[in-house]
Image (tube, rainbow, N blue to C red; front, side, top):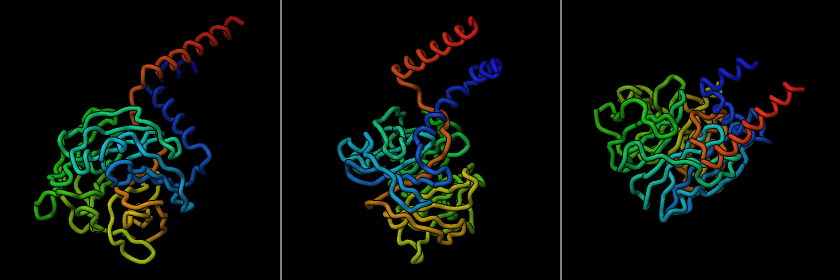
Length: 310
């Protein structure tokens, strides 16, 4: 056992273990099998981040993040990893995104921002966030393009090159606002602002892949519009989740066959994210948090010494 603890310290896994524990505390009271979906509302100031339970079709919680309280900021990207909510705003309505911001999830009740890092492509609007393989992906360039994707390590360090998105005709995407990383590694992105037509893109070249079109469906048929999208491959599932008509979450098969629908309490919701069970690289602790952690570790050491002396 002592050797295992030493190994945790040397690899930095203790920090991840602590963050994972926080995530489990944050989701206490919900059935483990339930699929939670979070959505960021487009509003000129004060936009909600809302969580619903797609398994039971019920509302869970909502909060107004700090970034949405600044002037006429307009909510866009969102991604939940463990107990961390990554989100973005367009400044002054449709201006560039200044920061990727992070709040605590807290079972959808949120918190004030605990961390932020600069837009990885300064001067552009980050319209969507996605996550896979320990990385957070920002799709930016909205609303005039060209749109690009940049991966980060989740705490501000860019990973790999910026990838420019191009259609089958070679044209750049300019205002697409739905993006997720599929289980096969390809990116699924819609054709334009709120357009309910999604295609897969090569994650290396950014080029559209022919013959991969899918649309969001609800019980009545094809959704009139769609923005955010996510998938449950990381949960072992085979479903897509879409923001349908800016006011509900629909679960469809990978080919777009309708499964279920969960209403959102308001309208004008943009990006969505399923709540993943474990975080990636956690934000750097605040000084106060470090002090608490240090005191806890000192206490742990004293307790071990006392145990050995008895």
